[in-house]
Image (tube, rainbow, N blue to C red; front, side, top):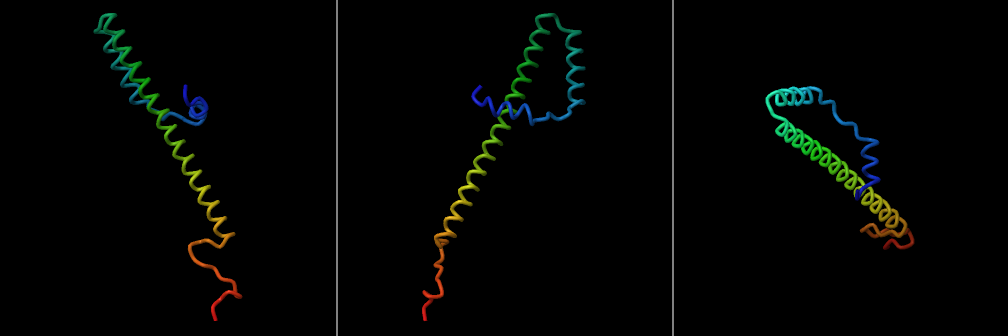
Length: 106
């Protein structure tokens, strides 16, 4: 996987929401389908469910990665801003001219 470390962070910090009602609804529908479908059709339904679950997991991981990258970019931007501000304060280049008392016009 391209983002192995971020995937490990995702696994460590992401807690899936409790979805007991939708999960029960899926289970009930699945049981009803098993009762009326033949084995090949049941297998097809399971493949659809598995593919849907993979899509949901991939989407969740992608969302986590996008949020992580956004946070990283914001952190770098804030760090650059802070560094530029420190340099500006030290050099007196803040967009306005600072004068010392000796330099003030008379």
